[in-house]
Image (tube, rainbow, N blue to C red; front, top):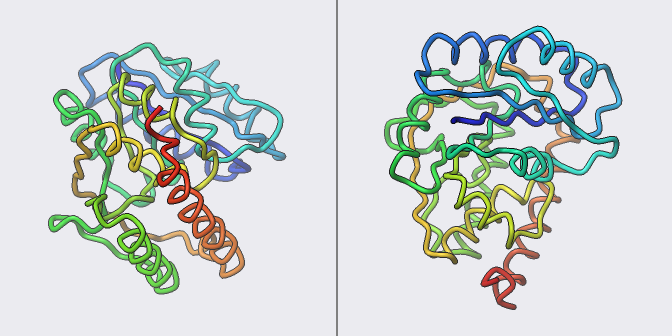
Length: 243
């Protein structure tokens, strides 16, 4: 069983369109049994109602959520705890707008033999086009990650495209402390601390949605990620992730 988790927060405008694209693609191309889990992260718009309607009208879609906004990492963990299959994938809702959906198949295959697999926009075989502001901020973040975690060996820790074998998912999230954006980095740090291999696969990442690239939002997210880096480094020093 392949579980594809999509966290949702105030995404009523694009929710149905993008979920239907993923649903239709997986139904045609993925040979394994699968489901799409829409996890609402305390949305204040019509997202929960749309998700519930999609789950009621389309096969292999399940909707769940909670009232208070807790962060993307929390949403993935919350949904992941309900999964009993051996492969757990996480994608951002905008995945169909930025990436060829065939990459979902690549990740599912790779998870047959690798415990943790992530998409990398900086893989030698990837083709990317990003907004300049996002590219600058992303490059700065990657530099800080290399500075604070020189042994991580991951080129794109914050990409919204990750996959886990179920036992690996349970292990890294049992030891984790982060719920929001820093969760993406923390699970990779924990995976390395537990001796799990992290495999990167190429993705073609084309940003076409400028509405997500506002300077205010990017500044806010960047400060949150910087605080997360410092907290994760402190947790690593204290041995928190050995449990």
